[in-house]
Image (cartoon, rainbow, N blue to C red; front, side):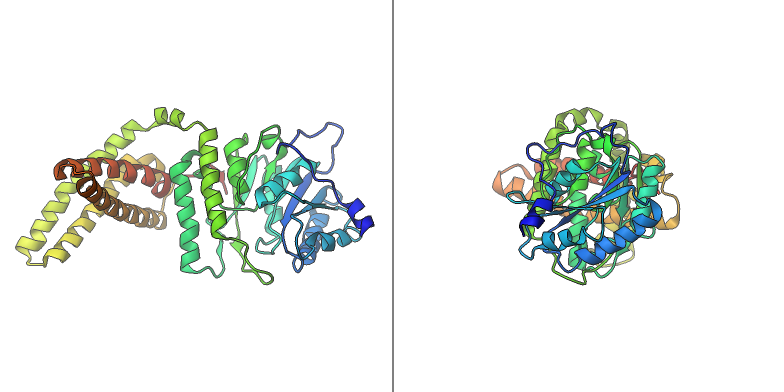
Length: 404
């Protein structure tokens, strides 16, 4: 045991900052960090697969760095035994620190590579995609992200609840931190490579397990590439995602928002586009009333049916005008009926959410604060219009900065 402890890579202390690559160290080209906690069953097959892939593509020009948070199942010890078989493997055992994001940064701090990467240890990230990410970085990308939300990507057997939580977290990120989260299609990804120079000498302060947000929010990232991958289900062990991780995610968003000085973004508000959006919304009122009159008074439909159909017709009208006028420049970068159908579905859901928000605000203003009902409705309409515009801009007509 003493011999093993002496063979461990020392854990860096102090601030989470990655130094520039020393001119003396021209090798290795690539350093891949594997954060672990209770991954005893998967660490050996993963190291074997990664070593085989990298030996065939960049032999003797890479290193694998396992950073273990002092796992009760002694994952670090299993990995350490593998260093006798895989000479490019290093193992770090952290004690007193924990958390996936900080583990990744600690690993990058001891890494020597020009290109840095991260992959989960549970085999849910297919190792073969790593070569595509590496090629994108070698062709000039500052950041190459494995994404579940581009062509070739997806999830294997996720439940509706899990999909909803993932998408909900992304929508929240787009609202709080649109200029960071909106740059890639899968900001929740934990599988990517980044140029060392893009994040060197930056004081990193991650929270939770979404290290990609930290890289996007604090790094000097210009060119981004994405590669599709299918997120695999676990074959060994249990998922470590808990509600605490979601709380950490919210705190991380707020921390990055503060870092990027939120008030400055107010001066970048797209006033012209917002005015067009408001004009289209105003036209939708007349469409709603006209269709309602035809269905209820002329065709004899019931009140509820007439109201629902007229509202949906107005939403469809607004979408067509917004797609052709308000967001036409963005729509031109998302051509095809399938892309348009997705935009309409998102627009519809956002408008329905806005309707619920409008109702809730009117009730609170009138019943809790005693505001005049017509004034309350005016305030609610104004705020919901801003909500609909902002969320649609960052979700329905969102165009990421990536090359695919």
